[in-house]
Length: 490
Image (cartoon, one colour):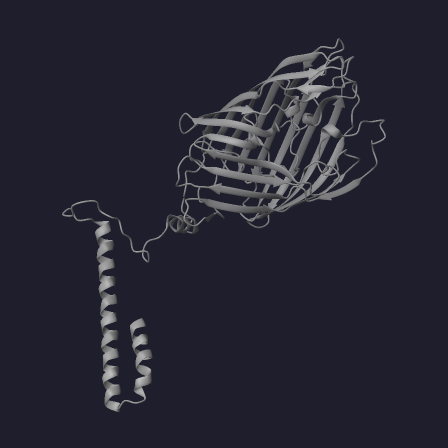
């Protein structure tokens, strides 16, 4: 066509002077050129078609290397093929044997999984990054809590028995109080590459319960930021000491007092022995919490000489549930007011269970015992409860134990209820003050309405009680809480 245009431009000045016969000759010449160009285009298309067939089934008579050639108008990139699978609802990766319970405060999604397992094998809400094997999901989860307490709770936005005001103190009492917050709102980014192999994952999650959020609003806090590939994991996330699949489905964002709350910088490796058994080994930041105000010579600093070392071993069976045994070993150190250095060995064991009793009934159980691990408890961790100085000035690791139980029943597809109980006990040293944390009780019962596929509304009643070293208590504390959570992707 370009040639036709050039000929027309050259011939234009002459056409005005030529006769009608000359014009007809020129017109015939241009039509012949157009036919020649169309014939050439048809020949090119025929050659491209033959090359495509040759690529699919190369001739054995050809000598030398065969060059793979594809028709760019007929082939599809891997990212487009992967997107078509997701849109069709096809399974893209193996499903984990763990039951994904979609709890109101979901702890399960952020956890890494062994082998190529994932909780969501259809990758809902993921979109492909063009010309790569990578998928990415952006998820926002707005969360609002409204609560009424029978008296001052010590924390406006979370239900924490550890900080309940004690009787005969200025903060105790105060009558009925109302509070509301949106600090449980989360932002999540999940990056996967299911066809790459090795269960590649980059995961990010934050909420807004950062420093100052006990009475304030929307204080940024990172919850998870890690990378995972071929069983190796590094970043900020769950310790091997914590089991995210054992958290009960509470409306209370804080969760039961007896749970382990250990998210920190980690380097871990997971090995799958078979489809059911796997073990994770971890080298982790030593979050040491020593009561420096105890003993005759109050301490001036904690000392961390080595990382925390730990492992867990899990059994997972679809339709049955899972069991996890965890162990943690640590070195705790502190310097007292006289400049003397003290060290003590800490250790802990825990056993957690998640049982699928039926399609509509699940149970979560946790038991913990150790010396020097109180600072990793969900409730006792609000105090320096790993170790303390005795009355003779020696450093002592504090014995700690806790139990938690949760039971969930699905009434139907839209309504479910969870009943939870937790107990924590910390043995105090002889050098600690009488007002130091000793034990707490926690109980809750709720009903959660799945209003829409992605919108949940829960109503919960909570009970808490605290007792300290000298026997003084907080009295009985009650709360009624309404929580609403929306998720872009279920």
